[in-house]
Length: 457
Image (cartoon, rainbow, N blue to C red; front, side, top):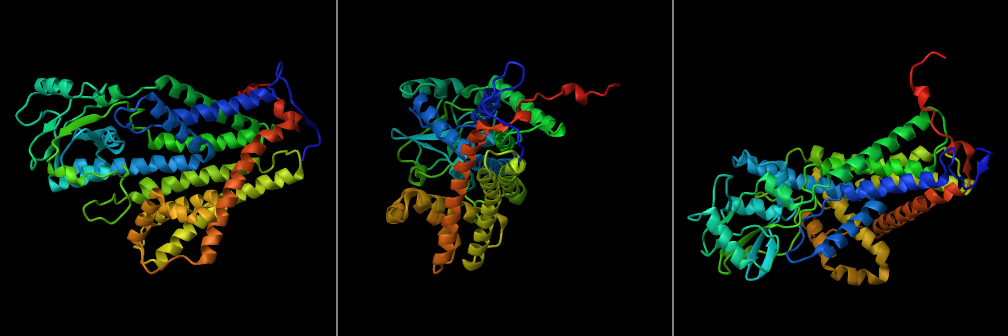
């Protein structure tokens, strides 16, 4: 550990403490905020709902960016499944942006004053059963012109601002005709925040270049900078998964359906994303390993392993140094434990040995473990009555042998690891800033950029 440590440093002639803190915090917040792509909000919900929902996702991204990346790749897997289905039906103009539009609740059915989003799962199933039919780009509804439809929509939906023209299905046995939505129409419904994304990408690139340059010139780096590198690299995974997803759509495509139509009996609240199951009417992509499991694993492990960048950094005390190292090891070990737990459940619950099922069980078990950690053993009974956990159990049990339950020691081991994982995460967040109270003097030296330019001395 370096002997020459200094406290707070101002920045008239070199970079100072506030420069390091500001640049790291700014990059993390900006990159996380611009990464977030909200789903279509419920009808009649205003900007406050969208802001609250985005703030919630922002919190997830700041505390656990690897799980935000997992959400992004889950939505990408859903969109790719819709894309494959539509291509099989001969929709040549259908793009990944259209598939994301479906996956984020872009189509909504209006039945008796209630609005229900068409989930990606139902979008595929209902097309296969003939319940709905997606119009081609050159088609309009049966027996009606576009101008007539527009007039009808303006009368019936005047209380709902910014909604696109609607279609009315009065027949109880005809297929619901889902209107074609163009890429331009999708883009017009959202916010093309190109300026912020450009700034975010530029800041991310500059941070990575600076960090690599300091390493190349053997200049000191802080644990805050190492943590920021881990954040932005994980953010890049989310960027790649959501690259084609429309940004912050504000209005859906409304389809009017008569109350007596047969589709009304099929409407129910549920997730927009396609579950990982073996439903013969909903085949998953054959390359789910490459489009979901491996990218998620890469995002999680890259974020965890990049904490090792600060392994040999100078910490104020030896205790803090070893706690950082222990946390770095724990982050990697934690995800290995989850894979082992998923494999154990697969073996004992007679689950088909696919990568998709392993990932699904790991995610569901993780949700339950996190719930138990934060709510305590006394609230387990309440937790089992919680609707979210009941849906998690339903997914698990749909794959599992009904007579098998995990052994007590295994559950304790699993839950305790979840507790220590989050304890380590909070320590790392606090230590990244606390370590700057006394840092090596070399941390505040600027990079000699001319040293990277070939020249004759």
